Image 1 (cartoon, one colour):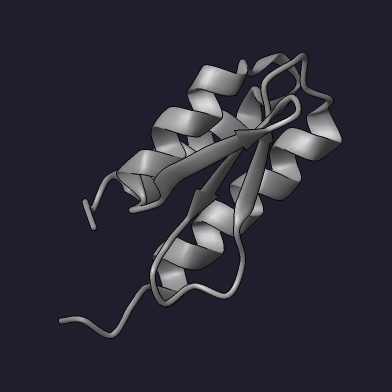
Image 2: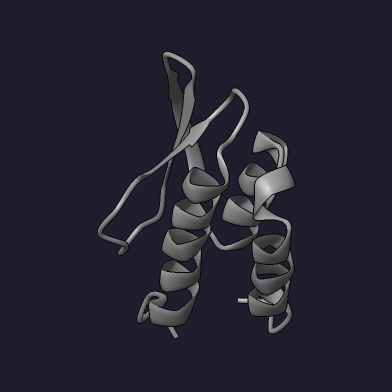
Length: 84
């Protein structure tokens, strides 16, 4: 992963109450998640070797929801895959 990715996640956490779905989609893709499909009003992302799929709402985000998604992305970056 890119070394600056955790810093980007921290910066997004500071403005979690004012994030757009596109912000979360971009950081998820930078963390190695791949778009799978849309289910209702949520974009579904997955990452090989990571236990959870991400369901990113495509509508307005609550701060709590944005923080939970950022925590999952951060966990995927910190735990990562053992591909190295």
